[in-house]
Length: 260
Ligand code: NDP
Image (cartoon, rainbow, N blue to C red; front, top):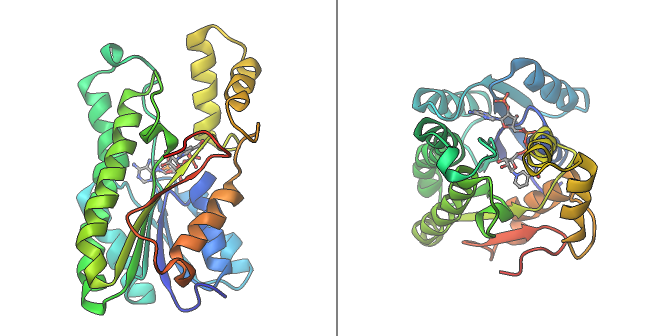
């Protein structure tokens, strides 16, 4: 197994992409600390893993709160030992509106969850990774952090910020044996976030939901959405030693939308 003996924290592991990654990491031998705000969803994730003989535990926490991030890291260490992999996935889309209609509070909330949360967790796990001379941080950004899309100024800003954070940390961490990368998924339409976003965009643009979705998919070389499993497969590769020479990268998993 590719992550045998590793300890991983996966944020936003209650559903969607984070749940898929938590399951995949555990299936490959990692002990997984799953975290999010909704306990019932976390329970389902950990039950799935435990039933298959995997090692897992959960912490109900909000990554926008510093104290909660401390609890996540402390609990992971207490249950499983030193942390090898931090997977920052928890995120919200926030308001689907033009910038002039987004309140400062709404903007701050998106940044606090999508960008400040990952920063808080990184600063908590990096010292022990440096001491050991190994570790992997993986940030789930978005093609929305690279492309120009309307109606998601807070989200796009947070995801672009995450790419800046990825590169800065990678530069600091590389000489100390730690790799930091990002994944930029395209539309993973099976998740709640993506479905709610599709509905909100369709309403805003006065379109039918299906029509809006097909328009998006037509803009992809492969002509289809990406799946949770496809994102999890790339996360597994980047978290594993197979990617030992890859750092400071933002890998698009988008079926052909963005080319940089
Ligand atoms: P979902 O809404 O399905 O899942 C989001 C997860 O994050 C949930 O487990 C949620 O749990 C958790 N979460 C949200 N806010 C917080 C918080 N404040 N503290 C802790 N956990 C939180 O979304 P996806 O699976 O679609 O998205 C996962 C990541 O992938 C996000 O960062 C998103 O931006 C990114 N992404 C998604 C794409 C898509 O098309 N689906 C495309 C590109 C990127 P809870 O609400 O219980 O806290």
